Length: 200
Image (cartoon, rainbow, N blue to C red; front, side, top):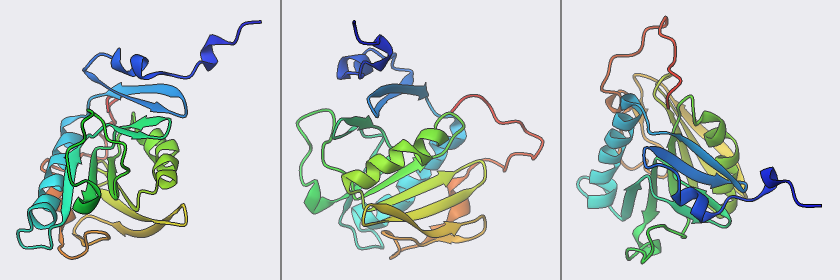
């Protein structure tokens, strides 16, 4: 009896065949795709990278020592995941990999939540990051304008803080320099009557 084709594990060739207008990942052996992010999502990622980049990458007004990459393709064991942002301490990623993907788990990852990705971001991707030894995980929700900060403690995620509108972000591993959470959101807050889009 032949195996059920639905149970076939996705391959890297499957991932490469996904059209470029979609983000593709292999999670628990399954190919997962979702749309490119909405403007609010993309703007939050860019602004967060800028807020962290000056003090923690360039060392302008902060300790430096980090390198940040937007949407890196990470190969963590059998899983292929693409966080919105990831950061490595420079001693752990001293040179550009020779491959288009990175096999060294980041020290910090950030997922920006959207309707099409929240299930994966809060579920299997959190487990993958914990198992790979990612030390810190941030979950940023542009719709709710909230940031959840987690630390990896013995393979389990411990919630350290929830940052709300009007508050300062000063959270591990970037607690040496703070910035206002509201700076990540260039657009007006959505009306309570606005229905969420089906897009990312």
